[in-house]
Image 1 (tube, rainbow, N blue to C red):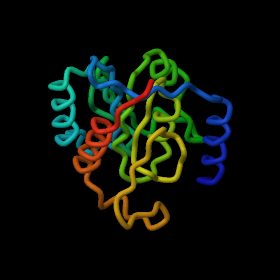
Image 2: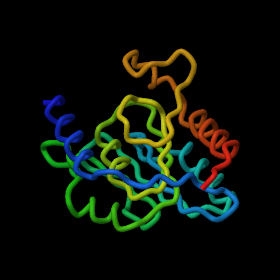
Image 3: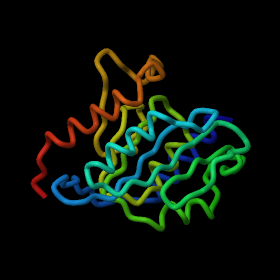
Amino acid sequence: MSKLKERIFNRMMRKLGERKVLFPHLDKPLKVLLIYESDLLERNDAIKTIRQDLLRRQMDVTMWGYAPKKEVTTMILPQSRILGMADYTFFGKLREDIVGDLRAEHYDLLIDLTTRPILSLRYIAGLANADFKVGLNLGEGVHDMLLSPPDFSPEQGDAAAIETTWLYDQIMRYITTIKSND
């Protein structure tokens, strides 16, 4: 069943077509979409700390998470949302109403803090309307910039050992170091 879900995802990504990639300029306010895997209790203390850091950098932050459970207890807010298994179809696709909510907003930067390959979060990353997408190299080809920690390959499955805060620090280090020619 997972191979079928993967094929459906790949087909959907091909149907979306090409998009224009624009590197974010950190000298102006950015609208950021933060994607993460929620803990089962939906507390997400590390994610809240990361959000506070982005807010200090004068960025408008929207967070979308995924908790691998049927019932999500966190309220749906304009700036924060956690999806559960009920928000996806039998074939693993996002429900159309959620796709509409996701595609309705435009973001300058998508930061994917996923540390292991989760199809549910790949849908969010793939469908998000963002100029630039960055995340860990998990072999899916959804992002514009991929980070790989030393001695890591997606097949090994070491990604679970990577901490979210380490990944965020690396992403911000590279984004602030690289200057765009746009």
